[in-house]
Length: 86
Image (cartoon, rainbow, N blue to C red; front, top):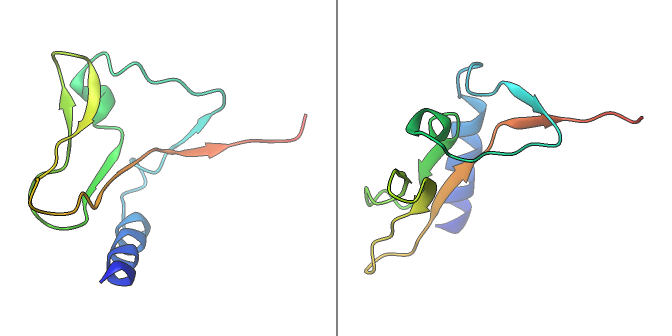
């Protein structure tokens, strides 16, 4: 089952629209000032329980809500980064 979850995550990343896979430069910082900032991340509900990462507008953060009766197999993916040798 675990290998299947990793395969699903990989497949989801490969199929993401290019807008989501835009690259950002380092150093990178995210303050989660608003929900739009959270939407630049990709959320995958690996165990399919409908309880996963969400934007917490009270604390301005990404929070992983979890179902206590299921494993927390949920993923929050960042954008890709570019780096170069200076």
